[in-house]
Image (cartoon, rainbow, N blue to C red; front, side, top):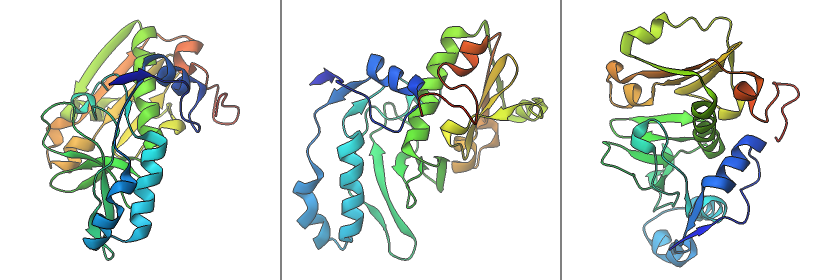
Length: 226
């Protein structure tokens, strides 16, 4: 059963909160606490179960419109049993795949949002960064006069020296860049995770005015809605 949200989670920009509130829905998901004793018996530390519980209480059941890459991203956010060890750290599923992609969406040992297949590849430093990136893609696609796609080695030809990083997406493998009249999203997560450089993809949203460039986030020192 899906329900409309009463409010968006805190810690997002005004732009992302508006996006989540207007387009997000809530799916009923079972509470993590019912699995605590079972997970402890599997050797999972209580602190890691606490981390999953906090994630679910904040994000569990949130369903967003599809992202423009990773075949849309998770269908909805809902954690699963942690995987890993005390030596290498612990991961848990961020949410089930929307489509048949060859990796899982995971939350990493440091709270990063990323994908896991051949290797762990963090896309954003936080789950908030992923949500911000989906919201920004939706915003940019609405206001851009032109949208251009570049892939593989063609991305190296993009002139981004005079662009500034979009800080709210907390980009790692995936980054956003803001220029004078355009936004550029660079998706390198699949290329790194699957050792497939041809999978690198960039979307260039051009012909943007100030609202299109920022949409509630003015600049790095005076960002509204943070």
